[in-house]
Length: 185
Image 1 (cartoon, rainbow, N blue to C red):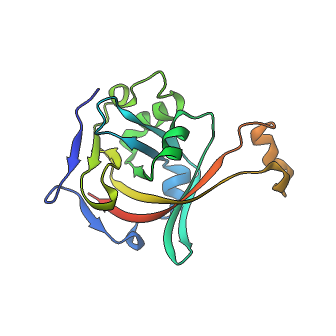
Image 2: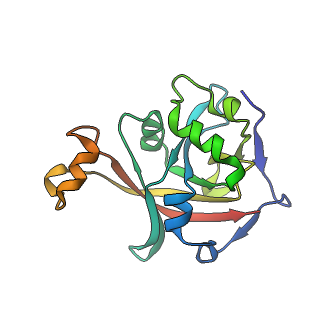
């Protein structure tokens, strides 16, 4: 397992207001992609996982700034997001596209994604976000506290094209998280 680092006061990371998030979420999530990460990096067993996602969004719900993500039950990360109270969204510059490709194509069941990509896991050490996992090489990190989840139900699809994505199986679970913090470097 690769070296892990903690986000500490005085580091290169600057906490910012989420409303200053650069560029459109349509671009940052849909085109540039992000890593969804959950679990506990401080556990020596490496009880965490990450996956690439290009589905999700940000907005306001229940008078809170939120992010929402979609994870299929077949994904190894699904169990970690289900179990954890918090999850992170990590955004990278284009020079990390190969790492994002690998994290979307390989399962954490079989691959140490940090080792395979060269990404350095880091974790938050204080307050309500303690234990959140992200990566040193990220450009932007958002940490969320889960507020709600719901399984997509095919009987509610109003557009017949949607079902073609699923072929009757492995419908995503949507997780909505209150944005607890946003860091950039």
